[in-house]
Image (cartoon, rainbow, N blue to C red):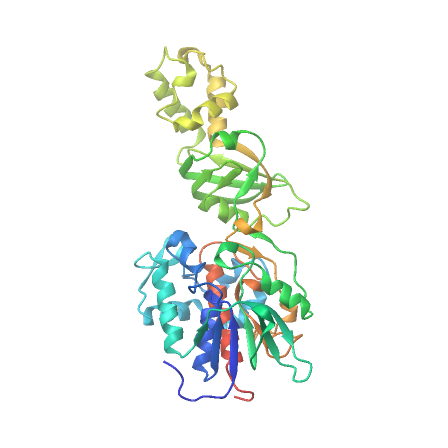
Amino acid sequence: MKNSTMNNLTVAVIGAGAAGLMAAGTAAQQGACVLLFEHNEKVGRKLAITGKGRCNVTNNCDAQTFLTNVPQNPRFLYSALGAFSVQDTMAFFEKLGVPLKTERGSRVFPVSDRALDVVDALYGWVRRCGVTIVHDEVTDLCVEEETGAVCGVMAGGRLRRADRVIVATGGKSYPLTGSTGDGYVWAEKLGHTVTPLRASLVPLVCAGKDCPRLQGLSLKNVTLTIFENNKKLHEGFGEMLFTHFGISGPLVLSASSHMRKWDKATYRAEIDFKPALDEATLDKRILSDFSGELNTDFRNSLGALLPRKLIPIVVERSGIDPHQKVNAITKKQRHALVRVLKHFELEITEPRPVSDAIVTSGGISVREITPKTMESKKVPNLYFAGEIIDVDAYTGGFNLQIAWSTGYLAGLNAGQSTGE
């Protein structure tokens, strides 16, 4: 509901994603007149496709666990999480008529498995709060010399003045949803430091010709281990996909967020195709399969063990002659096969571009933002919320919670009259 006590403040929120919608509605609830600028026809475009269209709203964990999943500037989030916690987020959406459920890894989704239900609920909420949505493009920000007011520069050079401005323009990931990185440019012009931008939660590029040959092959129930300078960095279990450039899928996106030293480290991946079986048990399984294929060529004996597309490459990597009869395969050769199946190695050369990432790592330096208000330390009455800030987390609902929490805190403070 719109706050009946108006305070004569005008707040402009730029960007109607997760953080922007939360900021706009919260500012309006403080009694401010809120204009929400969004150049797309619909709000929440990126939000509508998160979690494969299911929307991983948050992660149902305590604050300390949450912060251990934020490798980039977690301390900055203490105040934001204190002001609007995971439990607050879940209660908020339940109240808006979006029932939630908690799945593996404490990930929280709408019961309906529809991200659009989250978007629709937020849209309805900001409208009820009295927010005016302006489908116009802000092309720049400036500060008026005479008044010190932060102004939005619209297409054609028109100025839109506001008492407070919240920039929630997102990162550089998924530019087709409107996240083009404009906010970084504006912030730099106004004197802010933008830390190096790179991809997080992103597919990975691999060396060699094996991945292109496996393009389109999806694997389930495999273990992916990432090594950084030959030291184990991360391990995960689940689904992944081979592509023309390398590897992708949930397992890979998750792993990529741990890989943060591309300029000074080397990375490789190992895939365990049969994680439920130790090497001795897998060897017994292979012997059992071979017992019914004794006079078969080796290359034709693996159909019960592996997807068809994978067989030629596993055969090559095992070093066993593809035409060798199964009954002539030695114990040493079997062990070489087991080794390939449990430790399928890929050299990772780089992440895909930031435009292919789910989340942008880097952004407005947290040293230049007051953590208790989200207000700029450089420009009075300018606030930041969401992915544009140099804070990002692992996959699992943590990044969206950062958007809700920072959006809430920015809206709360931007929407209040001085001294309120």
